[in-house]
Length: 168
Image (cartoon, rainbow, N blue to C red):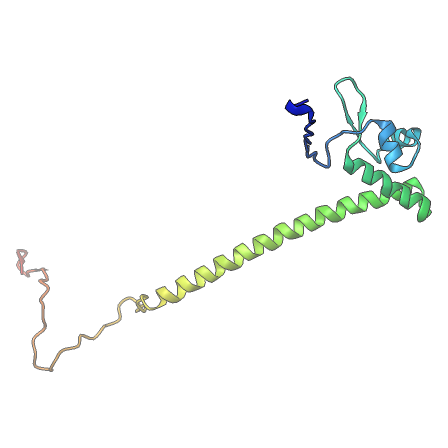
């Protein structure tokens, strides 16, 4: 009690992830509206995989309870047998894996499209800088201001003389 005889209430809120085992088998069975032995049977068939405490007690998560409710719905309301439920879960896992793969491929396709656009822009920018190729040995004409004007530069060429001495 606090001073003055008044009681102060405090509330602590704890967030628990959906896949953390928090319910013992009796509570999980009650939440899923089925017998605890049914949960054990589902575990043996691999339909549910509860976590275990350090002492080996089964601990069911919120996700496990939702899965148990789905099994109950498929068997009781849809008339499926457990083999059918197993197959539905297998197909759902395959569908999720395929969907994840498609998402990865779509992301990669967007990345590649951006790279193609970047390279195309680079190609367009370089196109103006490209010098046309002239086949070897072709004569490239020199442009002069007038036909009588001398070339702007000279290139010395050394040729061997006829008498054997090198001359320019």
